[in-house]
Image 1: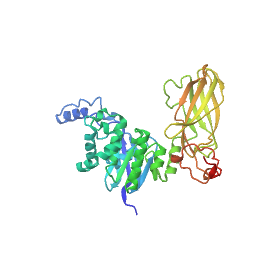
Image 2: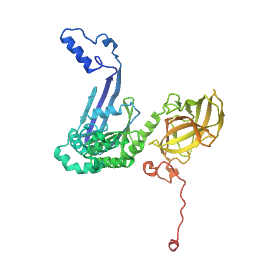
Image 3: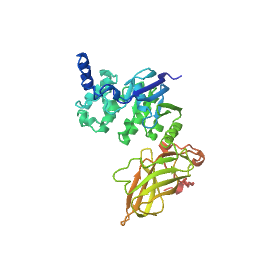
Length: 427
């Protein structure tokens, strides 16, 4: 039986919204000194106690969780679900309001880039400083110094003050120190999003080695590709509650459905870039006949799009773009041109065949475009985050195999042809 290294027992964390006292330490000290001297509080009229809001936020609500040696646990959930709060409790940065957390062994946390780094110190000096903060002895750091520097890929700049480092160099050095701490629990919260793709893969391999070496890894990310590649188990947090603890695949399905809870998506409220959405603006997207946003391979997605037009466009088109977990475009579909008149609010139906998309999770990006006289596109409106959908696996379509999306890719090509070749025919 695996050794238990972490137990979280009915943990809750509650925050009070607003501010305590006057809102700043300086004014609080002013008020304190006035009280002990018997003088009038200089901040009483402006910062009266009645003005402090009494609202509370339950960031975590009765969360229970256990972790054994060798586990690689992914924590999934939307922004504000309580993921970072849970990691801060495990790292003992803050204390729970209720419940108990029991930890056996040493914890290394990567919650923010460069935490514990001093900007005026060099990379080498910060390795010793950060290592000491994480619990390493000076002798242990010295023995592993060369290995840490080689892993961080910044040997040329190790004697340069870190205030001159880029954010990528920061996270490389921070991860290198934490990964070589030999912790019983290694915690990573979105830090790999800063490094380049090659370094991300290197860090994933290192965390996999940590888990295989009998230690535990807790990984938080919105990148489902890295979660599925690294983690052997996942939990799903929703508004402070732990609603699922089990397989990575099902937790990813829950996460995909959390981004679009209903069939209707309010596009008008979503952010735009630059001047998009002024001449024409997408107001609403309604997905038809599928509330779960799960689709079989080669099936159709149908939705309606409501648009408000402030200009006329004789060649208006709707462009549907499928995005990977890294927000990279994978596929595009475009409808035939139609005419739009100024002042018109219209709704159009759209059907797209998901074609050769492999099983996995994908994002939706929609654009409203027109044709210019030079043949180039004129962009009226763009919404990058129109929701997410999942293409389910079907081994019957993959010759009996379960699709390994992180290794095989996101597009399923047509089956290959093969034939026997005589040996003497080969060149």
